[in-house]
Amino acid sequence: IRRFPYFEHLDPVDLAKMAPLFITREYDKGTTIFLEEEVGDELYLIQSGLIHIYRNDENREIILSVLSEGDFFGEMALLESVQLRSASARTIEKSTLYVLKRRDFIGLLQQNPLISLKILETTLGRLRKANELIMDLTLLDARTRIVRTLLRLMEQHGTPKSDGILIAFKLTHQQLADMSGTVRETVTKVMLDLQYSELIQVDKKMILVLAPDKLRQSAGM
Ligand code: CMP
Image 1: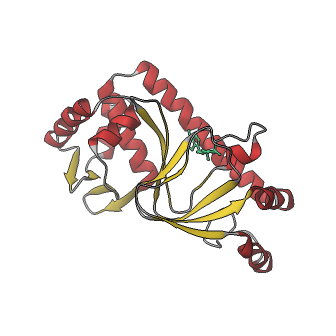
Image 2: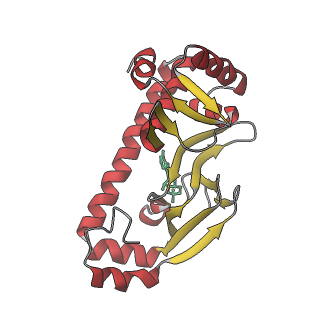
């Protein structure tokens, strides 16, 4: 747990005391961790893997966020009085999570104001992104929304390569559609166009952004 940015300032002795509170849990790819509206009693830290935070009805799904190594989720049901999950969570790759019970999480926050501040900072960043998403979904056309989704994924999960920035996990057109509030067919069209314009390259469902600045410009950013 020392590798998590939330704990890096902690004294090794305090860390050693904390470690036994975390339970390690392994999940196969495609496992639902919890569903929206369920009562929640646990916080999750991602040791490895990939998680989608999403909401859905019978017909459609919206992927609110993609979380990876070093991220946490599940804090809202533990801190809000309703105690219900605000969204669902599932693994997109085989994942290892550290699980912390509510009572231990609250104790940790009470004893470590710095951890509380860091968690607050992260959740405010998520609120800021959610506000952006509201603007995008309300005001922008589908192509621009898709391009902005790619840019967000690149900023959050991208690894620099010699010829661009790689979003280092597989993405289906359906997933991109569910992140952009559009349909798969539209994503397919836009992705072909972006490849034709040499703004991105796709290899085995992984996206390499060749020209981040041009892509930003084309999305009015
Ligand atoms: P909780 O409501 O307990 O369960 C769902 C979790 O998903 C929530 O806590 C947050 O940790 C996370 N979450 C909810 N909405 C968003 C969002 N818009 N962006 C990123 N993470 C979110």
